[in-house]
Image 1 (cartoon, rainbow, N blue to C red):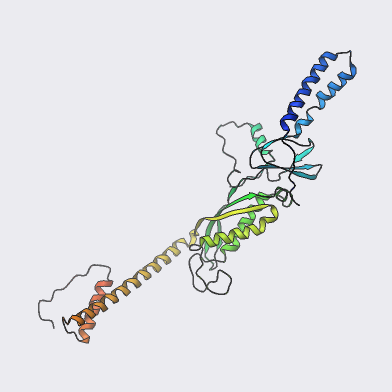
Image 2 (image 1 turned 60 degrees about the horizontal axis):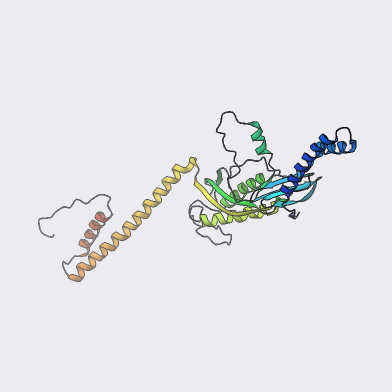
Length: 331
């Protein structure tokens, strides 16, 4: 179903003024006619009883709002743009998601500041059938998903979206807000299970058969882009457009967080030790080269081995070395 924009003029104010004026004329006619002019009296009474019907066709829209109208069950068109409109009084506004409240901007009921809330005000809020065309932010609950290595990961995303086709949003799906929320959860699960939390060997995240260094922690931009594309494929038929998707929370699940922290610490310690050893070997090599180049002292292989051992202990140790001064001969 294609969206049909109504070209109704913004003549709501004129219709309202004319209707009110006719009401005033009807009351004046009743007073003046009395029992002398029966036809005028009947016309005035009929208008007083049925003259409120045009008020049903008055519609007020704010900027970035739309109203989907049906006439006796048939799609009549959509009002877009701010203004005061007059439409067929028998048209009904349709928005199946009007009462749906999700964890998203512009769609969360604010907490009442008073103890006794007015039920009429709450009812007026819930019956509004207008569709917001603004950019909304959906922040679904965090999910626990296993990554490609089977490790449980807690992850949450924020999705920026908006309605671009009101007819599809209203008629193609039962409730476009709930539909979007479910598709976000499904797309998040489908994408996350492809990636490891950290870079892992022999893991292909692109699908080309070649291992790469993709990960949830290191490739967040790429992961977010894939999540956005996955969601967009599902919600196009619902008349929705996904502006952006961002990862808002990422962590190992609590049951394995401590173990993974120890693993990261062990990996960091190994990398640090490797760097220290490489640096120490280079320093020992440089010291021996300098001694031979300047001919400061002649050392045989045994003494060189002892010197290398002592220097490595000093350079690779966790504590400051305690020197032992030899006051005797060299040997």
